[in-house]
Image (cartoon, rainbow, N blue to C red; front, side):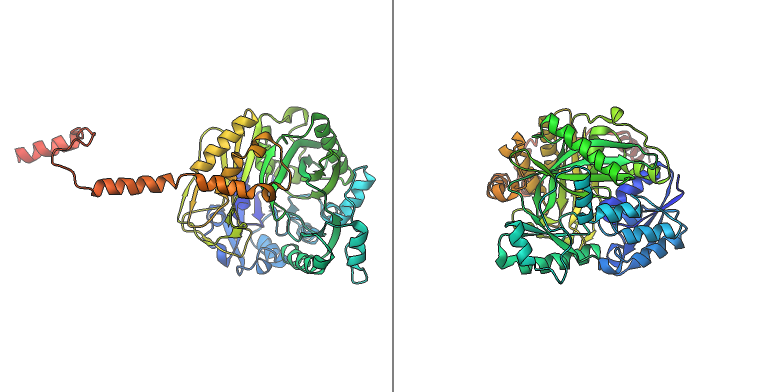
Length: 502
């Protein structure tokens, strides 16, 4: 096993990785930008290295600075987390060339599967149906308008070298194509240092279902079940659950088998996700493969009992998978709500500011992965994800009830968050029935906002105001307050007796 791991990331995922490393006895090294000097991942790590100014292009996306940091502290492995450089094959290759272990799939696999177009081609060869789209990345010699007409509107402009909804734009017609291309290229360059994009047909009201796979270098490959990820805004997920509530058993088995087949075809090592879209007729299509740990991995951990980060570390160190599909059958139901610094009822507008207070929910089956502390400044420099509230229940109704209760307890004071949106979603009939698709936010946002608006004001605040008014109000002498006088303790009695004797 490794002795020292550098974590090339920040926020809740850096904290998550540090904890698994600690349990395995591995020394951890955090990197930080100017904006993250006192962030929780920095305070929790064994060692820290400053890597530059706040903009990610000058810090968390700076390959040279991060590699130098790893070498300067004598790290023998590097974990990229998700986002930033996690799917950058050139960086993975540079890490391995420097003599460090890359905790993820081999660089050649990232090149093949991290590139969405190459992944589509391999999926075709492996027998997976793919969504119609352009054969390669758009070049200067291509005529996007002609290609778009051939594919048919509506369509998507998508980043070729990244995921997570970044570098993706919906195009309803030819009049907005050029603007969508420009925005997608710009966002993709910022997020992945890769401005290549391609065109893909937009399916009507699909479900977004993904399969968690895991492989090692000894040829072992396993599927850990699927996750339903259809509740999204701007093509980024907000609520996920496992198992998917509306997927038939035979389709579940088929998706799992095809995901494993594709993973074997690219000789996959470590944690990865094969993503599918399922249309209203039940026809499914390969969407992409994420060659990294997914944001929503905790709900798979809750239903399987596995630590996927620890498993990543073991596999990267050359060990075999510690489990098989037979002994990791998912049990119960788990739901994740992503807590973003956004106003869910105002176009998911970003919110910045200082975290004034936090109330963390607890109880059976409740887990909050976060990178927060009181006084932390939430800036515009990074993804607005603050944390992930996850629950487990024996049944889906129990998990929904538990999530509702946990969301009511969760407080992040000082900025707007998606907590109210997620809570309203737990009470919406479509979610309760498991009958929803990627249009959930578009179709139901007014109802969700209306439900949230009918809820009582912050009970904590109301109670505090009430208590203050009661304390300040005049009361007749001798009024019974309903409380018994405090019992005389030993300290008070002994002090009185001593004063009398003196």
